[in-house]
Length: 486
Image 1 (tube, rainbow, N blue to C red):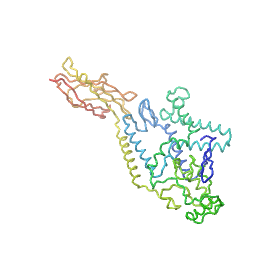
Image 2: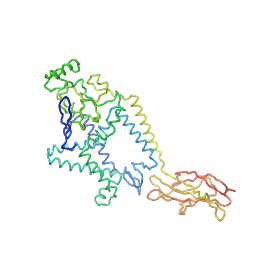
Image 3: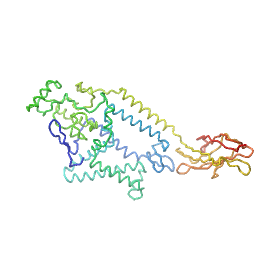
Image 4: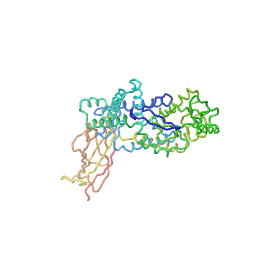
């Protein structure tokens, strides 16, 4: 929301003017949000700068999405496009964990961990700091725009660092030698982030995000959501109005409401003094006293704001708190228990654990050497002038091992056969050697020849055995040899 806008919320018959910058609060949930914001911003901006030694010809960035090479480096792991099922398992597991968290505590993800919330909270914090330092006025507005643009440009640069070498990227950008994709991402992400800072923020949560439309299907009567304890707070009145001696007694509430309806002055009030601190602290401008609403992101800042007021009034905290449906009738200032063992929650947790376990197993058992062997069948064999028979095979090798400069190949199960490469390279032991270049892959043509006296008709199976240069067997690929029919 820009500086020129306010949000009028009608509550209890009067207009609550919500400021363009939510008021800052202190308390338990504010500390949790701050710690999580710092941690997630640190992950976003700092992880690409971590180094990881992978040997020669490979990037030493710990986490790198290498689009030209179609691979993802994550510390000691390297993922290729054929590892997509692992990513699918991770995404399914993350979605199920989100369902689990929503079942337990509503939109807790939206309030504490969503990137939209993290950046909006950062922008609101910067706005409050500038307002304190520079005061309100034209100078403050211009300064906010400059800082917003700096944050937007930093966000775009931080995002680009996940796809390029972070240590070299600033120099490439400044010198004009970065790829067009880098400059395109800088322009697009700077523009979108600045637009978020200028116009969107809470509008994304209120109007654009589909998640609040889905969360109702995941909540149940035991889910914890931000709740206003109406039995304590009503009727509302100024702090000078005497407090009800027995908060929650229906007769007193009815009498107080009747006096208010008759135009008289409230004789007694509940704990809520209608200070609207819960509204002015809310990043989406929700008045939680009107009940749970789709705009509530479950951040808990209204709880901290209300608890501060209750502390000054020497009243128990928890007029606004995370509560479940049973709390509406329990009428207790004690915090409700968290029911972790509900069937719905256990189903989501178990399914998430299964999906993530499968992905972890897949990542732990990824083959280090990938071999594709294609027998050439046009023609299936070649009858040489000396009576020998030759079969051709197309071989492609890729690897993600720490260090592997070449692979030696031999035949197992086809006695008397001779194996040669189109390039004619051999290892020190005399076996054909396939060299692996900087891209850690090679395409080769294998020629398997049987002398005239050993040839046969039809098809016979055998294995190609691939070994490292120190003799360690890396892979065994089954194939077959065709001979002329007798």
